Image (cartoon, rainbow, N blue to C red):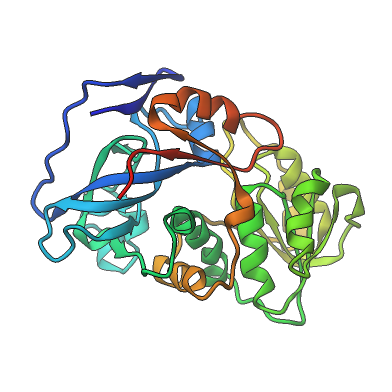
Length: 319
């Protein structure tokens, strides 16, 4: 099969990779479409020493391994857990000590014609949700994870820093809580998508120090962390959604003095994400910048790395 392979920070489109056979408890999925994520770009830059097929945001059709799912469109949670370690036994499988992670840790990913995942990781896509929209299920779930970790109420002031792919989804989900929300970025043309939904937006220089209860950093840039830290009131909460290939410099003393809570946030709940898509409570269509066939995957990555680009999709096959 064809697949996009990462090795030593280099991408290569390979055409003779064996089609995977699903082990017991897993299903094989024929990939229809997959999205290029900032994490994919950070892996290319060396954020984590991964080698293999990239990609973890996908929609596909079950091909084998589960009679009840064969022929049905699915999306999939990316962490494959062992079910036996401390974290699995305490209901925290995304932190499984022995997990593999689709396209990120020891498991070939979605930029390929086929992939395999545990059957329990797969979720049916409602008929009312298009394949384009369903491709956003994984990052939308990641956006919703914030509300699993932090209680957000209408009387709180919340700042989202970053107008890119994830920042857009985080903003739309937080807006549904009724909080006093401001989203800032560097690209007025991106911010206008949110403004059209009634969300307050501004450029980064609109942020005043010590004005917010909660800040969510989605830029993937250390400057975003610095801005979030400055914007927080004492006893504020800083939620990190970014992964960085480099290192952050943190004034730990100021975190202590202001009693700041720092929360890392990544994978989230798929069923609520699919429900938001099915009920049109979020709109992902404006986030699609371009689409490429798998044969042009290298061009797709060039496009995804262009400043100002939102979501780039890879199309593997059609129904």
